[in-house]
Each structure stands twice: as structure tokens, then as C-alpha cells.
Amino acid sequence: MVSFELRVILIYLTAYFSTLFILPKIANIALRIGLVDEPNNRKVHKMPRPLVGGIGIVISATFSNLLFISIEGLRGFFLGLALLLLVGFLDDYREINLKQKFLAQIAATALLIYFSKVCLRSFGDLFGLGDIDISGNDLLVWSVTVFCVVGVINAINMMDGLDGLAGGVSFLAFLAFAIHSALIGNKQLMLLNLSLAGAVLGFLKFNWSPSTLFMGDAGSLCLGFSLSFMALALTQGSGDKISPVVPLLVLAVPITDTIVVMVRRVFRGGSPFKADQIHLHHILLRFGIGRVETVKFILLLCILLCLLSFLGHVRGFSDRSLFLIYLVYVTLFLAACGYIAWAFPRGKQLREGEQLLDWLPAARMVRKLSRLFYTVRREKRYPVQLAIVCRSVDGGREFQGTVLNMSRDGFMASINDLDVVYERMQVKISFPPDPVERSIELSAEHLWLQQRNDRVYHGFRFDGEGEQRDQATSIIQEFTNRPAGQVVDRPIQDE
Image 1 (cartoon, one colour):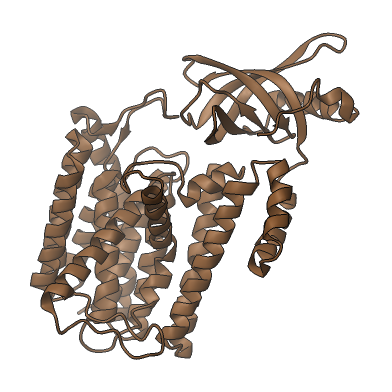
Image 2 (cartoon, helix red, strand yellow; image 1 turned 45 degrees about the horizontal axis):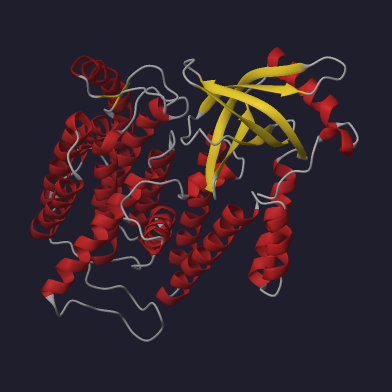
């Protein structure tokens, strides 16, 4: 009989190495049958990317679970997981409509509730006025449980916007839930979380930037479903439980981002499910942070919130105190994202915004912190008006515009005909003759796009290192070191 301590190690390593072994095999099959994300003029990858990450994760985690744990009480979980894996596969392969996906998510949640007997009955004592318990109304219990599970599923799905982001967030959450399971002595859930964490880590080896394959909808649906099950099982199950607010802290980043984005879409008069570029990672990209740095920043934020959940559990924080921590995070999230999205691209409006918000202490604090981050993050930017021609990395259509400000790291440009983010482009910037006309041509990371009035603004960051980058930096440095009157031929129009 294998000891529990040894099973902890074996289940994690088995899931990890199984994923490393199986993903290349099924990726080759996916390429043959067309289960791929095809390249086009809106995507940076030039070769089809297999959409098999989710399939590999589920197969590896299930295999390791069958070897090392009893699946008693987990029948509903695995039935729901199998249903979502099938639906996700069909969506990745041939695409199904939104209504069908929602019905599948509801059906998977119903299987979870019926067979695993796990549902949301208590929210805890969030306000210090007593436990918020809804167990007296079965219809309400089922409805709220379905709403929350489907919400978490779609929160993870919406996080899948950058290489390694959804997988990294899920990996940290499974590890956090494994530790919380250990703290309350729930060995079954601890092992189940470790198997999923190991499988996701194996997937990240192929999905970290630059990725060679994607998780697809099969992956995001199954990961979101698994995380919601862990949250319910740890807080609503029989025996020792953790506070219902703890999973809210562990999953605070995807949950808060999804709620804020959907509310903003509704207030703008659009569909809450229509894709756009107002997620947290889009806002950080607009701030000028690169894709890999954005993923690392969000994962660091997740680690901090997980550590706070551990601290709250060990120190015995009340539900009210834990919920207050979450509300503080939401407040800082809204203030920081709103400030970055509204103020930083604006020049003159930035100074006006500071004056308007100076009466609010929280706004002053966020402004000072973001200003410090802004100073450390980038070189000084200079106002310019330079002609730019850019094209996709595959040499497609060319777009012409005007560079409005520039640093040694990157630039902002107005390019009205370019209305999508290409992720990476070849850019050619022409400098005025002094005494001869010069230009630089190199690759740049396309960070963000923002439409304002009748103009479309774009943020770029110069790529990598090397002789080409050094030569471009030398020209930019020489140009931006001129007296201010020589840098701009005419005043920049207010954006």
C-alpha cells in the first residue's frame, strides 16, 4: 500500500509527465484532422496551432486520479467534466453557438449537483450580521449554484487571451486549493487538486510564450468547471470546511475582471458576451507592458491574493474580514484600471484628471503609485509627428499613419485604417531630412488599440535586441536629444 505522503508526490509527477508525453502525440493528430487555430492577418503565429491543451490536461489528470485516489463522491464531477470536454472539442473543431455552450455548462452543473451532492447553500457571514444561508429553498440553491459555476467557467474562458495566462492562473488556483485541502485534512481533494495542477503545469511548457499549442475551449471550459467544483467542495461539503470567501480570494482576478467587463458592456448598450479589449490584460498592454510581462504581473497578483487567503485561514479571519480584503482588491482594481485606461493615453487630459480627482484620497494614492510605476517602466516620451508605414509580419497589407510620441522603447501612433491588433508588425518610421532623410525599419510588438472619436490610436514596443535595434535606438536617441522646437514640426493636436 502506497503511503499518502508518497501519493502526494506521485500523483503530481504522474499528471505532469503524462501531459508532457501525451500532448505532442495528440497535437500531431490534431494537425491531421484540422483541430487547429488557423493563422490569419489578425494573429501572430504563421503555422496552425493545435487546440489540444484541454484534452491533454483532462486525460492526464484523470489517469493519475484513477491510479492514486478513490473517486467515490466524484462521479458528478467527472461526468460534468466529460460533457464539457466533448462540447469544447466540438466547439474547437467545428464551432457551436453560444446558446448550445451555455446549455452544456448548465447540464454539467446539474450533473455535478445531482451525483456529487455539491451545491452552494451558504455565502458565510459577509457583513457581520449572520450567515447568509439559502438552504431552505432548493430551487434557489440550484439556480445560484448554476449561476456561480457557469460564471467561473466563463471567467477562465475570458482569461484565455495571452499565452500562459489562463493556464497560469488555473495552476496557481489548483495549488492554493490543494494547500487549503491539506489544512482541513481533506486528502481526496488535496490529491485531486495536485493532479490537475501537475497536468496544467505540463501544458504550460507548451503554452508559455512563444506557445506551440493552445488549450482551446475544451481546456478553458474544463478548467473553469474544475475550479468551481473545488470551491464548492471545500466550502459547502460535509466535515471540515473553509470560509466561502476563501475561493473568492483565490479566484479574485478572473472573477472580478469578468464581472467588471460584463457590467461595462451592458452599460455601453452592448451584449455582455460580445468580445472586446477591455479585460485586465488588455488594459495592461495599453499601459505599455509587454505580453509576457503582463502575464507575469497578473500571476504575481494571483499569488498575492492566494497568500492572503492562506493568512486568513491560518489566523482564523472572520468571513467579514476576508470579504473586506476582497472589497479592497476590487476597489484598487477599479481605480487602477480606470486610471490607466482613462488617463495615461491622454496628455492634457491627464493633468486635468489629476486635478478633478485630487479630492479623493484613494485616487491620489493610485495616481502616486501608478506614476512611480510609470517612471520606472519606461523611458521618457517625446512628442513628435513622423510618418510611419507598418505591415503584418507575413508581409500583408500596409498601413500608413503618424507617430505622435516616441521613446527609446516604443511609440504611440495614429493609424486610422488599422482597426485590429496584429500582435507583431514590421514598422518603418521616417525622420525629417537633417541634412539627409533617414528611416528605421524593425519589428515592433503591437500592444494596444484605442478608438476615440474618429481616430484610432495604437501602442507599439520595439522588439528584442540586436544590431537592428541598436541602430534604431541610436537614431531615436539622436533625434530626441534635439531641442524641443526641432523635434516636432507643428503642435500636436489634443487627442
